[in-house]
Image 1 (spheres, helix red, strand yellow):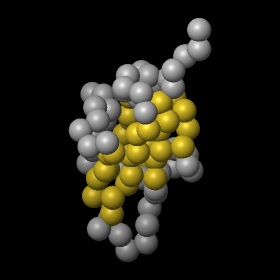
Image 2 (spheres, one colour):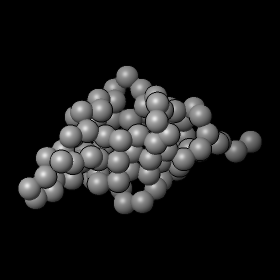
Image 3 (cartoon, helix red, strand yellow):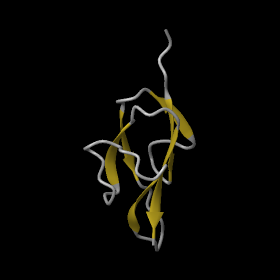
Image 4 (cartoon, one colour):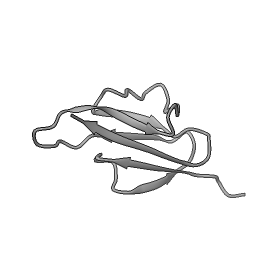
Length: 81
């Protein structure tokens, strides 16, 4: 029996470029990249309302996401202003 994986894309982060497949429950540390003359303001998560676990702090440039059980593609993007 094969394990079902979720595709997680993290944009503007040091975790990866593009997307990786993770098993539900996997914890992934992410850090927003620094951008000249822009300030990190939070993370945008698609689909909206996706629960990324109790360790996820949406306003912290360094945080941890826990891959949810729902199958599909999740995108977490750093937002700057």
